[in-house]
Amino acid sequence: MFSCIRDRVVIITTDLAGFSLAHIVYQQNNPFQDFNETRATHPACFAFNYAMSKTLEARGITADYYLGYSLGEYNCLVSTDILDLESALKLVFEQGELFQQLTSPAGMLAIFAPLKLLEQLLTRISRLTLAAVNHDTQFILTGSEHHLNDCEDFLKTERILFQRLPVSRGFHSTFIDATKQNFLALAETLRFSSASRPYYSCATTSTLSEIDPIRLWSIAREPVQFAQTIRMIESEIAQPTYIDLGASGSLANVLPHLIADKHRALFTVNRFGNNLKTMAQMSGKFDSIRSCAA
Image (cartoon, rainbow, N blue to C red):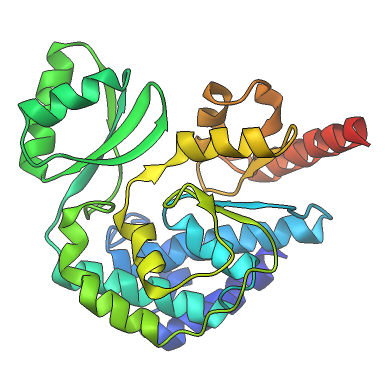
């Protein structure tokens, strides 16, 4: 199932981009060569999430609600029928092109420390921007290489854990503002429908049933409020089970900091391989949770 969906996405993307995602991901001698360009990484990440969603559906695992985090919100737009697949792929590819052509290189830094450190960092090092709050002791900053290096030096001195994210542009910050008008013009060419199922947005910390170009822009530009959105979901839905469709399972690792029962946070794959086994284990855990809830 995964390969069939992947092939469909590759065909659509090749028509749009003029290059094959499959070649970049699978066939190069160096799998990381040229894979920091947003014109390739955006559709690749989207394609992976979409294929994982359809693979779970083929296994009988369907969602009652959708939760979007950053670029993953575009997958929610397809899953809830707000956008069709071809339009969403056009959006993520051309958005990636805009970021590649019109923005300056920048980076993002995950910091594992209480949020009270945030104000100190923003005061101490100029031009850093809050990009995401994942939980009370993990947040992400965006900045230039120079300013992030200064931030890392300070964090090392204070013995505070951090991790540089593998991105080449400063998402969720002023670094992408140069693309706004082009992005809105692109969004105006798309046809949006009403959501067929509930969709929680980490950009707006609310459920979205309709989308427009301005809200679409906010997905890329506004800080990701993951912690706040999860707390809202937990207050509205009794004992939801979360399935992380990302390629690293990182959000499933964040969730235990935000929910009472860590067993409700599942991931489909992780960065360590053995993904068929990981998928089978996730399916078993999900079936167990579903049986207990019945």
